[in-house]
Image (cartoon, rainbow, N blue to C red; front, side, top):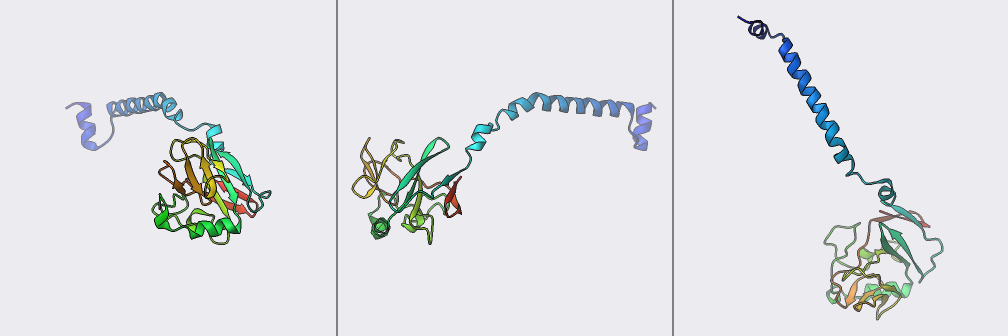
Length: 191
């Protein structure tokens, strides 16, 4: 009988078991040290993480005015709508809309494109926050323009109403609404 056979019967580890375990651990450490640079390069850099969310001061926006901010390289339209604009947007029937889906990141995916579903919600219906890229080819529409007083994309003629819903033209979808929230009455956090 060899030493290995005797020790395996008693259940005690042998020198050979120790060498196998040590070689396996060294191989695992080596594999991780080789793979780590490839895994690490997939993390977003600091500038990308900094753009994950922004805060926008809206204290200067009076009723009927808007501003454009930049988030993740895209324009963001923030508008403080007037009572007349809100009433016109509420009057539009869902059946008359080209895209009946709200496209609001804060709501379920199939939420209807009612005016309230496209705004900041109850009590803040005057505020609308949208990604300002035309859903046809990604152009930036002009604000307070077009037949419905919302946005107009002069490149191909897409017309959006004051709730950012596509009403005419080649654009297939409403302007998308990013995830946002009010951190105070004067600041909106996007992202």
